[in-house]
Image (cartoon, rainbow, N blue to C red):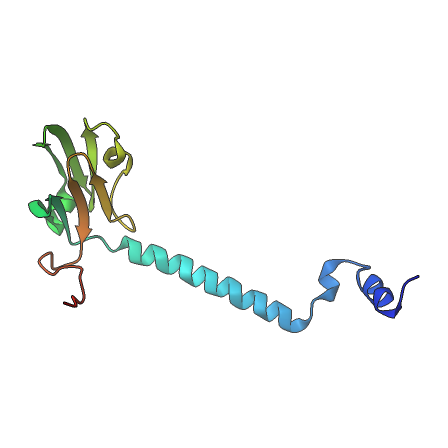
Length: 146
């Protein structure tokens, strides 16, 4: 025994789903799709802007720095930190740990840094490879409260 509410619900479920849409629903879907496309393209536009410099930091001290011109020109450098050997490679505005003999290989598996990827670290050696903004002397800290 169905009551009136159940009959209305059952009657409404007949037919294709798109017949239940109203004209305003189409505008809402269109607005959401346009917003998604805008955010997606904005992500690529901002990622295309290359980093201005790269820093190699060991135990809180900058041990190597590359400017934007050096990052574009490319090159590689081998170094040793805390008994671990690393090969850094850079070019086309990107940089990476190409090889390392550390046990976990997280730094190598981080791949190329550029675009949205701005940081790679090797914890056993205490190394941080970081893409930075125009002024590398300006810290990322906005405010320090004592």
